[in-house]
Image (cartoon, rainbow, N blue to C red; front, side, top):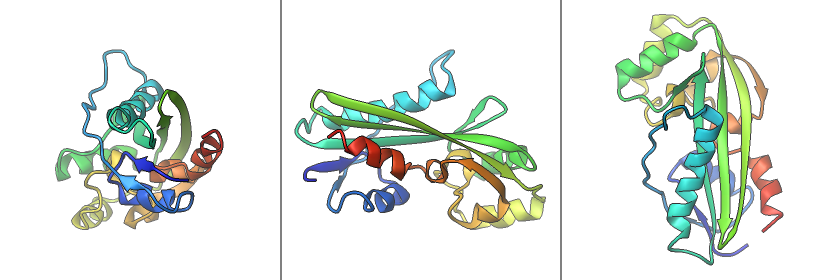
Length: 184
């Protein structure tokens, strides 16, 4: 497959897309990620993926643009990327001993052809001590991650159970994307 663009600078998405496509370019899309009034999480995450893809696709009409967005939902609230360490601590403390959901929206676009997919997973955390949370935050790994953690890294020790697409939690549902690529 030639002329593929990943509309993301995420190292995880880059690594996982390499499982499907040998060569591609990376062009992150800078968009307004504000949640619209009354917008539910599933609609929001799909809209984010579509807007990222559209921003890149408008200048690269021949390319296949792949965009993705991931959010964490805890007790009905979207937990985005933490603003700072204190914000990250609060997020992790809220999810301690509880189950939250992770949605990843994916959008593929080439010219006028567009496909989207939404994947979901549930993650249950063990009870976390303040010391465990602070040790994790000291690593700096929480920065730029929805819900203030990366399941594939040091936060893996927080995870009691996972239901659904693990790669949705990582931020790029490689199986779903593979199925979508068959249409292009």
